[in-house]
Structures are given as C-alpha cells and as structure tokens.
Image 1 (cartoon, chains in turn blue, cyan):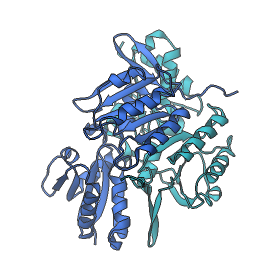
Image 2 (image 1 turned 135 degrees about the vertical axis):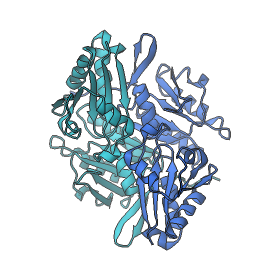
Image 3 (image 1 turned 120 degrees about the vertical axis):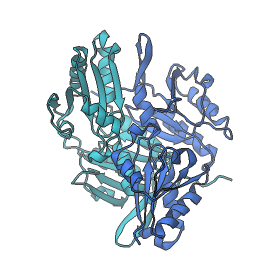
Image 4 (image 1 turned 30 degrees about the vertical axis):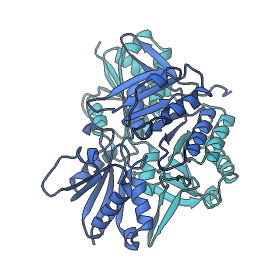
Length: 253
Length: 253
C-alpha cells in the first residue's frame, strides 16, 4: 500500500505565495480533494482527478481522502491559507482518530502555507509585531459564550487579535457583538484592520478605528485584526498608512 | 529615487518552504541585510552585497536598510520564519516612524513566510486546530510580569499557546517559570510539544506532557507549543503520535 495524504496549504490566493514544497505536493497528486474554490485554484492536468465539494463537509471530505489513500492513491487535500489554521488538517486527524484503524499507518503529511493573518499583516506593515492571538468567531463548532470569554481574556491581556470567520450569511451579528465587546475594553482610537481577499484580484484593505469599525464592510473572505494598546499608524502622503505593533512593551528597566 | 526595502520571510530553514514571491524578492535584491545565519541561507551571486550582523541590533539593521534604499538601492532584509512574527518587520516600521521623514515615502513591502509555529504544527499534525496564541517568552523587550499575566490569561481561556524565544543563555529560567504557571492551570497530561530547527538538518521533535516538560531540552531554536484541554494524541505503532486540537469545543447544541 503506497497511498498517502498530503494536506496542502494554498496560501491566500496568488500562486506566488505557495511554497515550493506545496507546489511539489500538488504536482505529485493523483487525487485532489477540497472545497470547490480551493480545488479550482489548482490547474487541471492529465492524471489528476479533482473532487470538489461544498463547504461544511470537512469530515466527509477527510474520510474520502483517507479511503482513497488506503486504496493506494496519492491524495492532496487542499486548504486556503495554512491547513493547520481553521482549515482541513484538524478535520483529517479527527477522521483518522475515529476512523479505520489502518488509517493511522498511512503516510499523512501537512505542507504549511501562508495563513490569512500573515498575508494581511504583511500588506498592512507589521500589526502582529507583538504577542497575538488567532480566533475563529464562528459559533458553529464552539458555544458563543466560549468565543466571548476567550475574546475578553485576550483583549484584557492586550494581545493583538486576528479574527477568522468574522461573519457569514448564517452568522450576521457575531462580528458586531465582538466589536462591541472590544469597545468596552480598548480605546476608541485603537486601530482595527479589515483585510479582504489578500493577493486576489478583489483584494480590499481598510484601516479604521474601533469606534468606526462597525461601519466597515466585512464578509467571509475578510480577516479582521484588532490592534493592541501599542499598535500604531504611520501616516503617509497619498498612500495608506503603515500599521505596526512595536516589539517593546513599556516598563523594561 | 527608485530604492526599495523588501522584508523577506525565509521560512523555517529548508529552501522548499520559501514562497515564490520571497524567492523573487531575493533574486532582485542588490543588498541583503540580516542576522548572520539568515543571510548565510541566501546563496552568494554577483551583484549582491551581503551585510550580515549580530543578533539584537534590529533597529540599527533597519536604519541601515532604509538608508541604503533612500540612496536608491534595492534592499532585501531577511528574517527567519515570517518577518511579521517576532522578527524584522516591526523593527523596520519602528525605524521608519522615528527616522528620516523621507523614509515614509520609500517603497517598503513585506513578503510573508512560514513562521515557526506553522512549520512545527505541520510536522506534528494539527495542534493549532483551535484558537491559539503566539507569545514571545523573552523579557528583553517587555516586563516579565506582562509575560506572565498574558500567559495566565490565555491558559485560563484554554487557548493553545505557541511560545517563541522560550530560552537562551541570557534567559535560562523563564521557560521553567512558564511551565510552572501552566502546570498550575492545566492538567498534568496536557500535551506539550518541543519542535527544534524544523526542516533543518538538526530538526528534533519531542511530544511530551506538561508534567514531563521541564525535563525536555530546549534552546533558542526551539518552539514550545502548549496544548489546550482538547488537544489529543493519536498513537501509532513504531512512529511518533499525531497531535491535533479538534475544531470543536463541546457544548454546541
């Protein structure tokens, strides 16, 4: 049995943001599995069978990948960004743990990718320059009170916070609630960044403040970054400001 | 004035983990600036001037890069991992904010890279599968009480925690203190991962528990990941276990 599963991070969108190792894994695959828009990013070629599926069927997709690998196929499972950050890698290992005993012996590897918060931060300057957290705002897989308790904890401890899955048609109010919570803890002029579809043709970036953030447009392709108390803007003439969080926290002797 | 600065993420070490865009930025540079081991990763070629410097002179290095760019040179500043995560990007923008007014108009871009926690997570399975934080344990740039207050907050809120800069010759006790703090909050069998020099010839990975973690070797090249309450091991015969954090938190209806 020579099958294998490689969980490949496609990065934020532009092919130049793939790693060489990710590209090699795609080139060597016989089966390609993933959410439709991610599968569509990988060019068709002879010998590659594409299995695109709808969103929110991650575990079905993972079981399908593992079954194909167990039958001897070389399978690539594709995720946007990094597969280990709110993406397919955890779903694969959930399926391994609860699936066929033989799946544990499969060659399963993860090829990391540029996750959305790193791509967004790079475009903005260096907003993640200090301690930071990555949270999913979705309450599909965890109770909303857990989301708010975690968010409150990291806001009070002055982390920069990168919010994944901030909003969707089925979850229209969670981002507003999160911004309200932040407004009760951080100053109204705290920088808040909305970074949409980074590196894709419809990329859009908006640097605003906590006071103005509720008016900013956001959708499923948007990453929201809440600055910390130290996060700063560097104004520029005729261009968007740079945004960065200094490495230092005042108080070191 | 056609000079520019690109802050380039070299990823964890292996050249296959660079993005295409990062490689292109290196290929186009006239001057290469960075900490010596990172500069050494970029092959010499005619037309490339290499300026390697010692550690802990980040702002001098940043000012040097900006001065060269202001004189018309195409400068690449190299960081291991991602430049925006405990690396050179924040130092560049600090230098911009406090430096020559003309520096604000320079073309400054950041090319993201695979930061250590993503590389380590990919090797281990998917330990960052839930909400997570990235913290530097160094108290060179922030007071130690801030480090412990932040760490306690995220431990109590049940984040996975990736600890950068866990230990060095000059900071020998901070990692032990952090593990002690974690042991007072999380269960003794919580998975703790030590991932050293991922993708480099001296790569070493150890999966242990919070109870056993103080005995594990660590150095400046080590990333320590503290699991959350949900983080799980999948044992395998004759191989290291997979480690993952499920996407779900119990309690959703």
